[in-house]
Length: 111
Image (cartoon, rainbow, N blue to C red; front, side):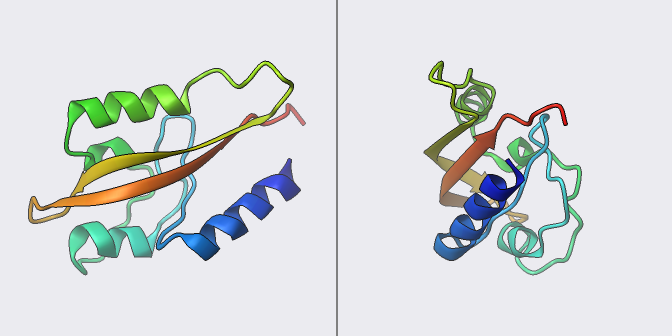
């Protein structure tokens, strides 16, 4: 799956303003300067380990996003799930930023 994951990341980098990886708890795996700049209006903060949901405005967005990312994978043998969700994020001044989040979830093999 490493090659598949890398290919998806490359594709997302081409079509998205910001791309990043989240862990199983929906926390940022690494520092993402582009995302930090978008939500902190230039103030540089390290968001590694911060839940993406902490930037979401509404509880409905949080619940819906969590449900989508923790949903069962299709029963057709697929090891990935992709989708799109509109989310409102909050910047450091409290402004709401309308976004479209493309996501690709992978089931990792125990190797």
